[in-house]
Image 1: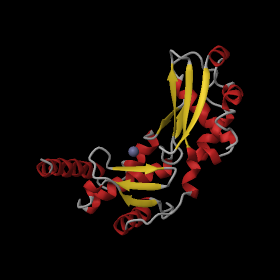
Image 2 (image 1 turned 120 degrees about the horizontal axis):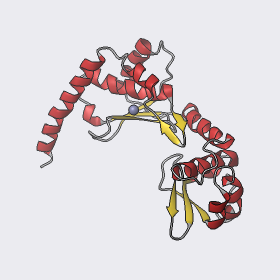
Image 3 (image 1 turned 90 degrees about the vertical axis):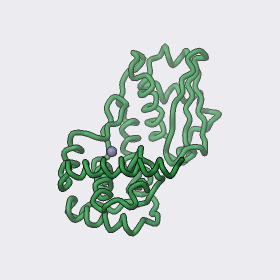
Image 4 (image 1 turned 120 degrees about the vertical axis):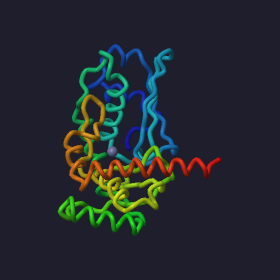
Length: 236
Ligand SMILES: [Zn+2]
């Protein structure tokens, strides 16, 4: 990327000019920090009200991305931060659109990992049954043993991760979670007012098309509560 850490404060005004009102721009200082602490293309914004300072914290990955897209990221973060204030001029710019497009398309160029055979088989059946064979295979891996998040789809790496809590669950239950995550790959996300929406009405409509949807949801709940009981036995 073109903006270096040192020259950033002078560039920031022109970058944030389209979204942020002059009074806040001129009364605040800004800084940008790159860090290894983030995975992939993450970033956040911190507001130090007393010091009137705004700090952007970005993954090092952004250093090699074009300035117009990084501007979109910085503008999006700014919009998110000031969403409820009246300091915003707009919440939608060409740069924000470019940034969102960039994030949505990252999955097409993501690196391939070694996917799990069992999950690949499940994906293949789902692809035939629900996507007419048009769903490209994402990376499919097992993640941590967690109840909190049974699955997730990460756009930047095009990866579906399934909690190992489900590893010995009936195939249909695993399939229902994989299906949900594949729908994230299909629907991507909508951005409105600086917020991303993932479970849109169209998403939910597709989700309900899973065979015996309500029944499978129930079974999944039962499976998890039984598992939780056993899990707490093991962990005391
Ligand atoms: Zn979801």
